[in-house]
Image (cartoon, rainbow, N blue to C red; front, side, top):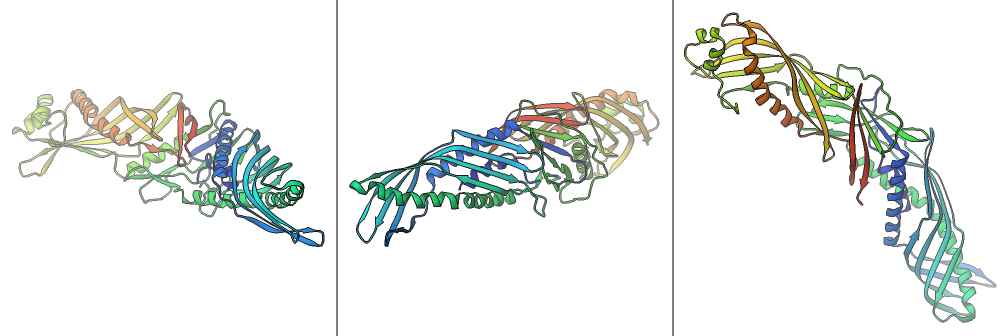
Length: 471
């Protein structure tokens, strides 16, 4: 029971995560984040202790020539106080939790019997000056998920004051003496094993976390790690694999993650630094899945009906080639993986592709009119909503050239306005509809980001955020 709260300090912060070489995502937990986790954990501990159903205590104590038989039942914690508690980081080792001068108030039934007399009643127990020191490490399982291990634990209890209710008279001190012993013994022998048992419950929760998070039907993110969290005095760093794969295809992308350094934490509890590599693997995943290919036809065009008549009014060669007006179909595709670039306050996506224009004949067959190369430079605006990283594209620059024509050579500049219009009204909105689904951020159940702030610097995107835990 006590363990679950002590470990909540880590569960609020640590993710089930597998790393190769340089990470695609760095997670940093600051001292502020650990302090918040400590406060939440202690509050959960109070609530759990007040709900806990404790087993009865019974046994014998030596008394002169005989024994004192005792039984303590219906034990219930009515109040818990933690006036002093601290959490600190031990570089290269783990996390140290110290609870000092804690106190508990307990109600219980008691029964004492000797060969001379017996008595029973209700009592209130005040336990004070309780100290707990626990050190946790964070090893990994064979799946690359973080575990929590209690490497050392020590508890001491000071004063126990028992107030007995009932008619006991001169036997008051006698009864108290023999009730204190089992209470002291229970605290000494059960506190750390209870912490270890609680850790096993936390590990079960961590084991249930899925390190592969689906984005949509086309791609999923690997948020695993295979190296230990790096513990420094002011913070904990976790290097996550941070790779986006095409759905069900875990072939390593043809990119190498560059090293990058996150600045020291300042005002936030949690920092998530997504490298350029992370976004480049997402671009590769969607390129592999064909997400950058789009077909625009008469029945799918939202704003106007494109036809050979419209193109013929702009390009005389099309009008001469197709005297009878036919619907037009445009096929756009990326010819190589789009390139992501993160610079100071700038997030851009460069797409190299081609567009082939077809006339759709009455028998539903198509006839190619011309093919063009297209280079589109776009900016990506990012924000966070519902624990997801959302994005939207904006077209910055468009370059194109004619690569093949069945209607004869023509000046491609004649198409500038209509191509720009098609991209702005059809292609960009379609891409933004997909981006609006968002990238799920690594997170734990019941934990939400509060006041997240996004900063884009050279090589990575940094999310600085506080967190809120709802128990």
